[in-house]
Length: 292
Image (cartoon, rainbow, N blue to C red; front, side, top):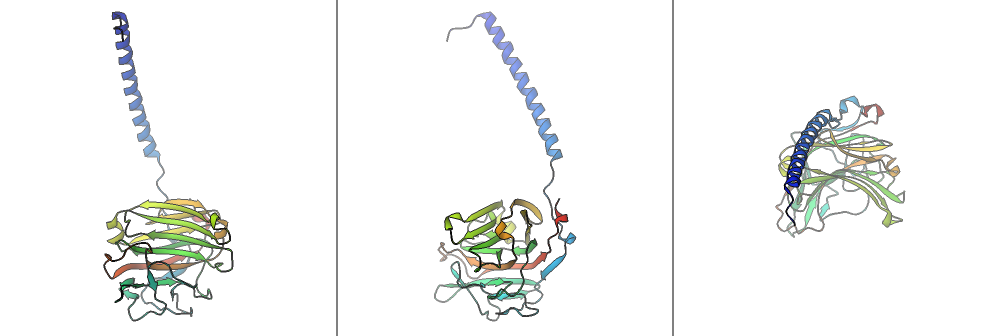
């Protein structure tokens, strides 16, 4: 490139200094604006269930499990429909202290390796195979849990619509689904499983970052507020995400708690037993006045 004249050199130097000053000024303004914006940010919405009417409460001071729900018995063991999922068989007739036990007001769900290398575990449902039991359309659903950590563990607190088996679709909400082999996040998901048109399944997923210590060393609350218009997910009662409510979710939904094992994972290195801890499960009636 030809060397510029002295006059051009002076002009370039002045222009450079002007641009530098302008950049510094703009950066300062941007920083000040960002600070002001940060100061004005609205904090994440925290839900207060005390403002709602309690409709279901399980504190696990005792535990009664029935094959068919009877007055005073809130749970049945195993899925309310035929089949299992995952690599552990869910025990339909619990034995003494397995796969469920109560310890100082906390439900312990245990997954255990059998002598032949296969696994057994537990799943609780709030309805039986005749769909007798607890289910509710809309409202706030919450559980306080402590999770296992280990490749292959798959604990969840979730809900299914009572129209399952009658409707050509299944409505499902996973309040929390946690994979112990991927311990730095959990997922909260709304599903519609279309059995007539499987290519039209619908899924809306929120993945929330956590630490393994946070999940395994202390209890956390996982909640979902299901309304006619929106479904809002919470972690420790702070909103983490929301989606439009599927029209297929406009139906009563029942509760499920389980410690499953991932079907595609080699479990040879997974220590036995594994445990999921449940402090409580509570459900509150829908009230639109709770919305911010």
